[in-house]
Length: 445
Image 1 (spheres, rainbow, N blue to C red):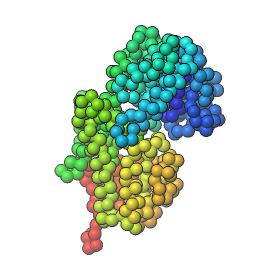
Image 2 (image 1 turned 90 degrees about the vertical axis):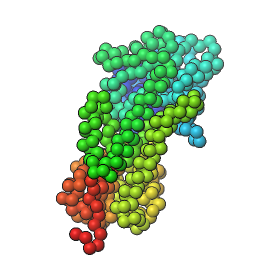
Image 3 (image 1 turned 180 degrees about the vertical axis):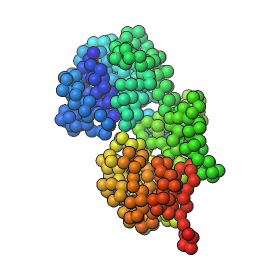
Image 4 (image 1 turned 135 degrees about the horizontal axis):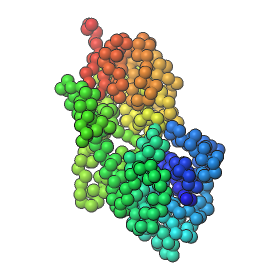
């Protein structure tokens, strides 16, 4: 098949590369000349494990190309995917559909033959019907269908998620559009991965409902973790005991400093807004949004306690600032709440992150970027683990503690244990939902 993907952001680029690896002829379109030049030179503008190699393979095979010419890209394309951004609209929490509708109109004006216009971007329920109206108004004679095909890609594992998905969701209005979409995903269908065909609205809702549920699961376990700290329970044992229940499952039950990233914050806000517009308040989702912000602020209080009530003049080493490992994405990362609080309180903050510097330099002013965890922690008063990168999972804690001014650690990903920290020479260690090693004061042993 010939496929065009409009937008070479995270979703568009991963989708385009993977579609080409299915054997389709794919053209990826973007209006940014610098981005297209990079892609044509074989450079991937985002960090995603395995993407650069897979892209090079399919470019070399002649199945994948990049262009700024939308009209040329969609010529004879059987499916055109819209994969542009839908950021949270400032002021009301709704998804901003400006780019989606602009691209839809552009496709309408350029298309000549029957085309299935597929929305890959995350959009509010009812958007695909609006896309249909926009296309029809711009080109009343065009024969076309619209389809909804939400993405479920985890950053850091996107290629595997695309190639071996839990499910593919496709919303269509006609059998003809359904047949085209089945052809697009035939390589997955032949390997028995489920392809769920629904109406447009159900496909749109599935995306929001799934992400809101996962955000709820994360937020629930973070609230339970706070209660564990007061009652003496251990959140790791609680999570394990819960997760072994087949009705619950063990995924997304890891306590941490709050969810972030490109999807959960944006999609929970959009779902809450959709509920308000339809007079069906999403009360659970609204509570999740509120509690998640409180979780991030609670992390700041933990750090403040470890700094004896004041950040002023303290040297703090922060290990990891991206919202999760194996990505360079900083969107709504807990670090964007926690690090500015440290800097604003007068701390001298050193940051190390394997991929976070590219975005983090602009987003985290006033910090000093260093190469590794040991340099960050040298002569520091506190070390904070914010992102569970693999390189932070096997630290020589004894070596780290030895060179700190006051060996104290806030392990906000529960990688280590109080026993590990004490044995390594830390005089204070706090994590989330577990017992702590409280800092000693003068006169105490």
